[in-house]
Length: 215
Image (tube, rainbow, N blue to C red; front, side, top):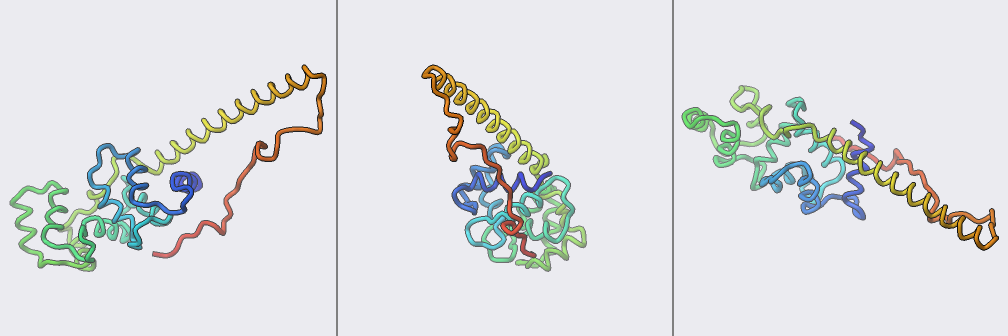
């Protein structure tokens, strides 16, 4: 996993913005989730700052949180809590908890028994207590079926390789055409060459441009 590729992919998708809107998020995720009907919930879970768009930090931590083998850390628990907090009230009500238990495929008897032991609504601290008592098996919730970070890096590398190959082929054909014209005219000015806009350029990410704030 190369975070530089993930950051490049994020910027490329959001360009000319540095942030990812909900519609941009849907477009991005549709490449990895087929017929996903919970993209709004997923976006809200990613959007920890609740500003209506995603920074790269939010995007990256969100992707990490739904990785198949991500440890069930406090960061991931907060992600799950935001995912099921549909009304964004910083608490889970009866309906929210029912969705959690149904996503865990509990039978009706077990579901009703658990629901009867919980006083609603519950805040995040109470949610964590329920998890610590093994009343909610959150390790099974909000998981991608395959490692997204790997797929993102592979897709970016594949597109980048295709672009480079196409660019070099175009440069080669243009150069051959240029020299053929000059040779036909009996003129070959060696001082001339591709203009500045056409010359191959190399870019590097400035370390000062990428920052992760503590959560």
